Image (cartoon, rainbow, N blue to C red):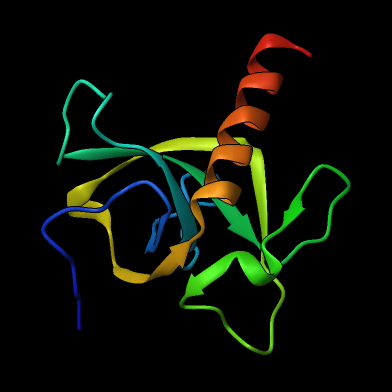
Length: 115
């Protein structure tokens, strides 16, 4: 069953298709921006979440507000970003703290600026 809210906000986490792996299950995405995009309420700028502990990933840990899977550690990949259309969202997962989300936005910017 597909459960989609009317609008997601910065820090929300949802399941949506993985554009980097065709034909696979959806992946988790952390919403980084909404209102600043050209089509608010229709698309979200997001960073991918993963269970891979890669050097540049950031462990979410206690920054989960809701939706954490107790048997798996989640990491955010601030260099794996994409625009997710609202209609493509499969299901909501939870929410991550404002502090962690803002840190991921800063890290995305660092990658974009090469710093």
